[in-house]
Image (cartoon, rainbow, N blue to C red; front, side, top):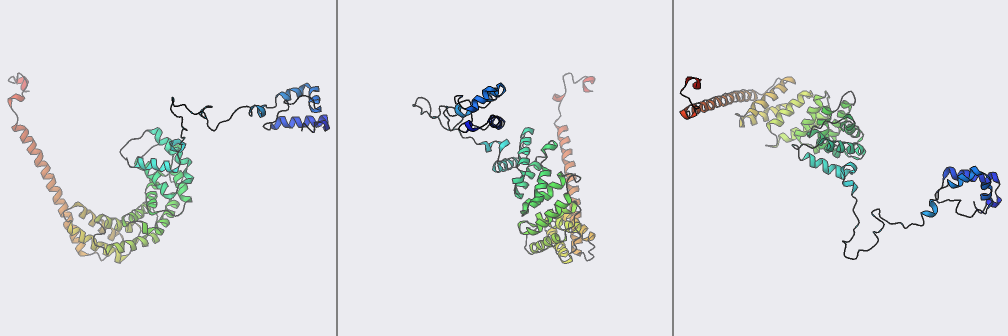
Length: 380
């Protein structure tokens, strides 16, 4: 522009200068050259434009006169120490290791460390920073990572302000995710219905989607975990027939393996099928037979009476008329054994209490009396 200034009119010079003053491109300074061009002469004729020249930034030349360094710690880091002072080393700035700026790896490490200490109380500011960073990084988390974060806040039962609520963002991210692992489905269906507000989130739709995901990854779930998923859907009022069929086939395969299932697993499966209105008669009779066999082995325990009662209630709820008689007999004997054990335990406690009072009376002596114990007032 300075070279072309002899060929520019006054109006053109004024327009160019106003453009430069408005946009202020870096490194341009019109006051560096001597005022010899017609541009400067025209500008000097107008006093209000002279102030415009002075307002143009002068960083272009000054930035070149200073030496620049590759670090922000100081201007003398390039000087080699002579051995008297310790050698200066570059400081490592691991900003991702700070929780407020943590990456996904640091968030998961922190969540797993907190999850491994369920009895420890962490300060509230820690939970606020962790929740804030998790909400900011929610779109980067995978389904299993969502389950880890969710279980961390659920185990410690953290109560935070609404702006630090991690449950609704986790639900939204889970609704947009795909390919859920089996354990992630189990954690989400157990925790989210308890933590979400049904009026603010579509809990039913989310649980239906998780039920379909559980049916696709049934091979990753054990029988007890699959039954727990069914129980969570039952509590929410959802009936999922395909998922019940998958769980029934998995349970039928496990019934053929001796010792693969416990009494609690059989009772929970019968109750879950009754809640889902899944009437598979051969499977239900197999559950009744297996429950009767296990109850006979542990007849005196309280678990036997409770498991047999739950299985009988489930069969009655589903309208099964052909209830095995040996199951009824085992249930009756288990109930009698439980009542007898409870009575015996109560008698032993009363006897122990009586022995304690007798020992206390026998060990009493005159030395236990206060000073002046011979007086009636002291005795009272």
